[in-house]
Structures are given as structure tokens and as C-alpha cells.
Amino acid sequence: MSFMMYKKVQKIVKCLLPFYLLTFLPFAVKAQVGDYRNDFAVGVSAGYMMSNVAFVPDVPQKMQTGLTAGLTLRYTCEKYFKSICAIVAEVNVAQTGWKEDILDVNNQPVYYAEDADKSMPLSYQRKMTYIQVPLLARLGWGRERKGFQGFFQAGPQIGFFLDESASTNVVAGKPLANDRASQVVAQNSLAVENKFDYGIAAGAGVEFSMRRVGHFMLEGRYYYGLGNIFKNSKSDYFGKSNFGQIVVKASYLFDIVRTKNDKIK
Image (cartoon, rainbow, N blue to C red):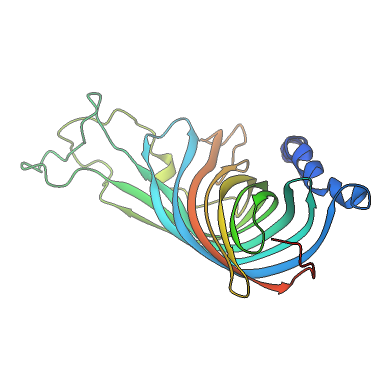
């Protein structure tokens, strides 16, 4: 691990330590304050992802859209006062990437000189597929077995690059009707160089539970990447190329192990 990566991982730990302590502190004090739980649930999730890449030098962009789906595991360990404490692990396949906003200095689309009717503005988009594995500490408030519960969860996430594809009508050297404002184009010819991604994910949502049926959840989540898809040494073109991702997802979980306690609502 490089020194810079070590410092970034250290920063993640410092940011998330208070939240993890709040989630797992009940393990240490359950005999005094908390209500013990031993609930384990598994299920599936699917959602819609909007993403971009923060480049330095800057590349003007629109949000790239894609899908995400995968497996979810949840272990609920404690109810501490009114907070339901759990750890959530996921394994998802996610479509991410970026879509460039190719404009001139007047914020108008750029066209080729031969395109008299302006029917095909310049375009470029990159789609990438990752396996993403978040490990989230979760706090919930509300009903556990029957009814609604609100929740917040946050934690580290790692990703493994699978493949990529590009779609473009950009042809180098072809005359343009209006010059593009941004001349940063190195990203168009570079393949993903760092196959491993890592960062911080956080989200909030609502859960509806039914006895003997399961748990239905709707969540909004944001992921901030701390790794770069391209190399960023002094001799490389980009100093930064990290992901930003917004996810809206629905999940269904069913209980495998459930605490035997008639008082749990």
C-alpha cells in the first residue's frame, strides 16, 4: 500500500469511527442498557445509478445512468434505547461511468462543419461495470417486525472493475463548426488503469416489515470514491479521477434467524 493510499484509508477510519462506535457500543453494554438481538436476514436489491467522474483537469459532464443489483446480508445485534443497531453487507453489480457535456464557449453544443442541419452534436460516454462491496453500519428507528422504520447507514465500500465500453462520434482532426470550450480529451483514449476502487458510502431510507413475509426497503445513497480510475503520478495527465455516484434502490430481505421475543414489535 502506498503512503498516499494509507493516508486515505486512515482518513476513512477517522471519519467513520464515531458512527461505528455508536452502532457497536451496545455489544459492550447490553447487559446494562441495551436490548439484545440476534436477527439475520438475507435478500436482494436493485436500483438506478447516476454517476460521474471528478477529473482534474476538469471535464464538463452530465450524469451517466445505469443499473445496480445484488445480494444483501443484514445482522441486527441490538436495540440501544430507541436505536436498532445492525451491520449490512452487500455484493452488487453496478453500471457506472461518465457522459461528457461537449459545449462551446457560449454553452452551445458543438457540431461538425459539414453538419448543416445540426442533427448530430459531438458526444462521448464511457460505461463501466464494477462489482461493489459496501460494509455499512446501520441505525434504525421504528418498528422491527410489523410496520415502518426509518434508517441511516454508512461505511466503506470497495469495487472491482470488470469491463468497459465507449460510445462516441468524436473524430480527431475533423473540422468543427464551433470550437469546444474544453480541450481536455486525454480521458477518451485511456482505458481504466486502476482496477480497484474504494471510498465511502452513506444513505438513508424507509423500511416496511411484515411478520412471516419480510422487509421491504427504499433507500437513497451516495458514494464518494477515494481511489482514481487513472494513474495520478506527476508524470500522468490527470491528478484526480474519482467516482461520485447517486443510487436509488429497493430491497427485499427475509429472516433466516430471528430473536425469540414476543415483546418485539
